[in-house]
Length: 228
Image 1: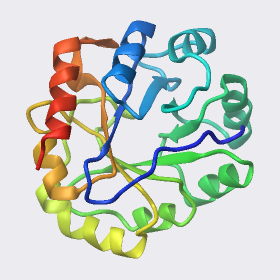
Image 2 (image 1 turned 90 degrees about the vertical axis):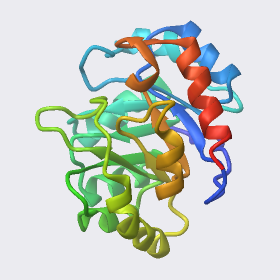
Image 3 (image 1 turned 60 degrees about the horizontal axis):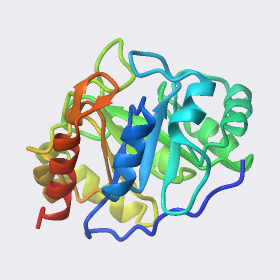
Image 4 (image 1 turned 45 degrees about the horizontal axis):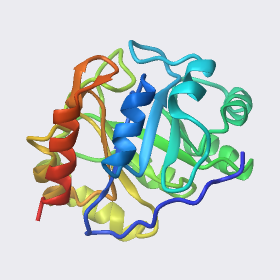
């Protein structure tokens, strides 16, 4: 899977936007028009699941200015390599509590991989530092029993700020992607506290699972652009 050019990441500047859980080509087009740098389709189950054919129809081909992120659940390295190649995904976002060895193997095979670290409570687990050693970015999401993501549950950003600052000092070149319960109403606060490089929104801009609401998506983009 050949990596596509990735938007430049400038820590402490306005973060890039990833719109995830997309199920309609018109919502992908809207996200791009509004300036999203990443658009995501779900291959991990749930109400936003896209079949491989629908993933391609919805996310479209590789193109400049936007990276298409395929979101995987529990999957073997070989299975992910095959599917990511078939989808021609630009990035593989890996849920299912991946370990550092899996991330390392995927990157060695030429895959741009974003492991997802599910966080419960007010501390980053040690795995955050381990995953960053080989990841193209680290995704922080809320840990909800029985669900991989897309829960609409927020992290305790204020409580995590100290650990996130320590993590960033140890891994300054690794982008931080913040997911979990982001909405137009709270994304500015999340950015101010954690300074992520990418904010990842799905249910927070929907009228129904997988259906993005244009007004809410516009409000989210405006909040990210105007946070400071």
